[in-house]
Length: 391
Image (cartoon, rainbow, N blue to C red):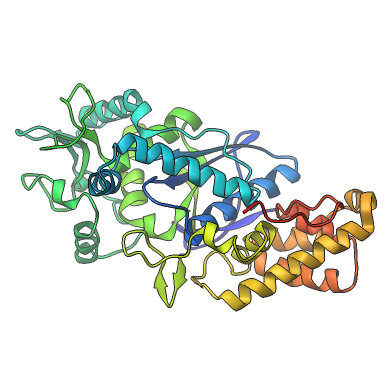
């Protein structure tokens, strides 16, 4: 049985679902720059989770959103004198191409925020009806966090720490100073400039948090089994999603919260806003896609991962050895089952580093089961040898 670490409960727990299909929502990209290793690490972890569940005979419905209107996009587009829509489409195509090169199993649905306004406005109406949302005289709708006593249960941060994190958000300058409480967050904003969308609350832009609550409900129903993303989303994004969704529908929003720790470079988080990052495309000039895939799984997802070029090349050598083993085994390798030991390690909170240690031992011993393990992790090992990197 699969056990995962649930951020909300702060412990490992068995993954139990109430339906025949496991529902998974992962907060996706804001497409204003090129895919870096931190993005790839996060989405490959969920890729392994989906593959592991499906290999065990579980059906999975996987949704990953695209935040295609956001202050980051608008600022970058203005800086580069480019249409924000054109920028978003171009960067999304690049992201999809990068992830496809890494052998990504695409989500079943990738909803875009700008195409989901009806579901957002329906959710905002519910929150206004329950008293959790309120309108401001100058326009806009906000969520009253004091009406939700469990606000903060996911992140367990102090109010002072929450305020500091909110002040650092890209959209902080747009927050209305007339809101009731400093931690209240926007459901719908009346903005002074930039593109706007129509709504029953006037033209404006949706709040970041309401987008994911609405899209998760629209495409997966309520509650969902697993909600995930990068650990930097715990507050304010996922905290706000819980407050909105549970206030609107009166029951838990997600049964499990799964968060991936950041990828670091020189001890600092990889981030588009700071420029401290290594792009997937640049890494693929040095190593094979299967090598990069293994490398990004070589550290446990709950631990920060400081990028190390030498370690990356060592893992790439392991991927090359697996391909050579597959070529020697030929079609026979495709018939070998995944050893139970590897499945047990993945059942234990997706312990990919332990699986890689097992994979290395099997490869050194020339065991065809290594090929089965590699394929289970998403490597494209077909017994035909290692193809050259497409990049």
